[in-house]
Image (cartoon, rainbow, N blue to C red; front, side, top):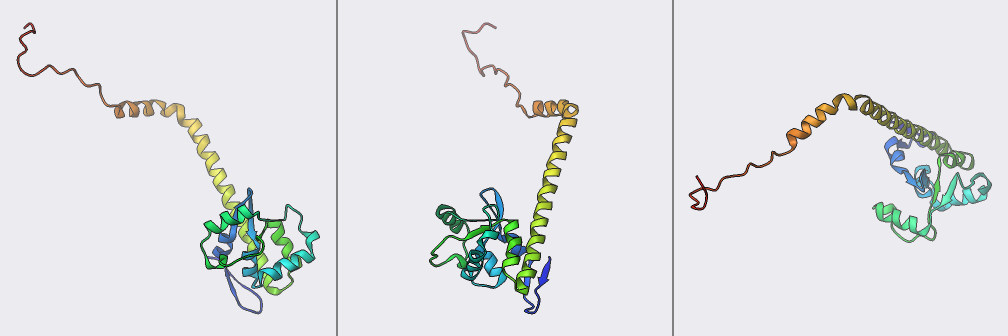
Length: 180
């Protein structure tokens, strides 16, 4: 388990906490402004204000605001007290590049250390996904290569699994209309 201590405050950021905050929304791996504010130890409104003051640094491929429907779906999936209460606006979602840009907007020591850990988490996630893709590709290649050789084996197994045709049973007892 990776743990990072931030500068002067000595706060600990478990890697798992960061990894659980990375979500897949609109086909992109993102982190929500609410989770980021929690990690940076700032109020969500303070984070959003800093972003709005520097909005030119956050194009659409770095950050987008969740729609009402997306936010409602997300709230129904995440059952934690941090999502309770009324919110005036849906949170913002930050791509990896958007999170990196936050380090230039939030200049505290904590923000620097948190951003480093978040970037590491994104890299690990990318490596895990690449490993799974590579493994699936190798498995498919093995199936193609050995499928013909094991076709006979698979057919024999299927034959053994198929129940035999039932034999016609002769009626028990004497039937006077049958010839002997």
